[in-house]
Image (cartoon, rainbow, N blue to C red; front, side, top):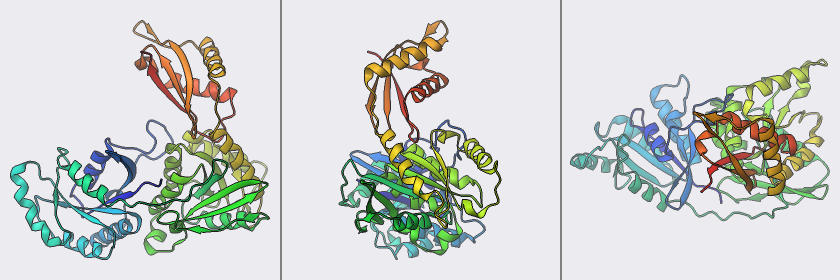
Length: 436
């Protein structure tokens, strides 16, 4: 089920990012403690009671050199476009301002539910501050305090009342669902056309499976595939054309529903920070990943060019060291035919299961090669390992004391598992638990 999307909108300095971090539960980064990816974040997963949802902090979206009110307008419009529910954030201590009224005028245009939040109401004696906010025309204002975490439960209860119920098309386990993500103008649409233009049976285009998605199922070499494409990737709007940060929001729903994600880079422009941000979301979501360098026909090359570009990718995408890289041209169809077999291979790796007996032999051999570390005289003991999930493959390692499992030794175990088993293209998760 695709998660509903909540966006927090409001003028600057009303506490949007504070509330975002409160709802998410921590100060978030894209890929925690992993080098090679930018740390700033405007989007995260969250949960409240039985509800899982995604949340956008528009305060983290920079519009460049646009005037103040124009920035507010564009941030509000992106929320209207992307969100299922909008939290309109105001500042109770400052009352209703002209900038609040400007945001309200923009939000009047949407048919999406708007929940009005009045922040910085830090104690019950301040409740009378909220009454002026009825004038904004969005019904009952919800008093909250970002600094103290007050009122967030009631606010999220109100948001959850408006979460849409979306019926999605269900595909069988044998169907490989994949999407193409990347910055604007890297050639995603051209690659989709190159896929569909090859000889295969196209089943149909299915519109409306999510709020803004179009699925293209087809069969190639007896394997069923579905390209998951968001309608937003195909839209041409001023904001999206001029601000690359918004391309992240366009990719997120597609990532969520995919088994395999193709991270598309533009060979002409090289690697950008935004490429790492987009790829970071796919990695964090635990999807199988293939790095596709498009427009390879447009650059001058010699016998060292491909190796040099590969080295750059590995240096910039340290967290994707497991992802295969392919250089293609959607324009000339160069190597496009090789992408589907790679997708099939990494999809199989993504769903691979390892017998516990074999897994434990590998772990025992790893410990014999590199004994577990000690800390203040205490040595880490590994008792047993087992696989508990697929997509991505997830392993639990039972130890004597969880705190003794250092990140570097966990990384060593992961590398040993990768040396023995073919997990190319998929992240794997190692979870350490203390044995009762």
